[in-house]
Image (tube, rainbow, N blue to C red; front, side, top):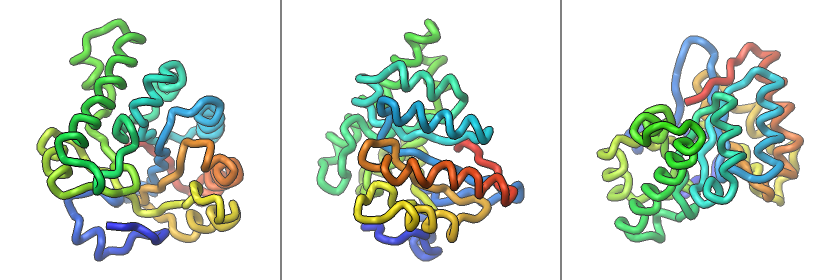
Amino acid sequence: MNFSWVKTNWLIKKLFSNYVWDIPNHENKVYLTFDDGPTPEITEWMLTQLKSFDAKATFFCIGDNVRKFPEIFQKVTNDGHSIGNHTFNHLNGWNTEKEVYIKNVELCNQVMVESKRQKAESSITTIKDNLQTELFRPPYGKIKPSQSKILRKQGYKIIMWDVISYDFDATIPPEKCLENVLKNVQSGSIIVFHDSKKAFQNLEFVLPRTLQFLKENGFVCDKL
């Protein structure tokens, strides 16, 4: 799979039905997701934006970033957002051997659980239940069937997306990124943004306007 479109079409969703692409509902809920964090300053700016619109989201974190910035990671969980696994080193599944990939996912999980455990001073088992570490998004959307099969057997849900903003692409102007979202969002959409320095020049423009649009049009931003 090499995704190069903004709106994921029904055929892809059907062919890869073992993955979660959207969550149809009758409550006008949509699901904002942020990949690649936590990132100093940027994550905290995003949390402020979300809080100002009473919006919840899901953060697919890179384990090495959680290790380097545990305080920022804890701010995400303190604000009541969901956490997802995005591998420890942002690995491309197509270019990674199965065993290496699975171990990298587990390392990310261990770092997140330990970070939460240190804060709560509780047992790892309890914290693992509280941290929604069953959510997994493969970096670049690239994962081999063999890798997916193992992770799903371990209890992970493979979360893809219905709408992608392309905020990470510096060649796309922020107005286009915003259009990518606003023209394609619908009830149940899972929308991808990025918690990274590379994406921030677009995200700074797009996120507050997206949140305003969703609020004005009766959407509810929920976590996965």
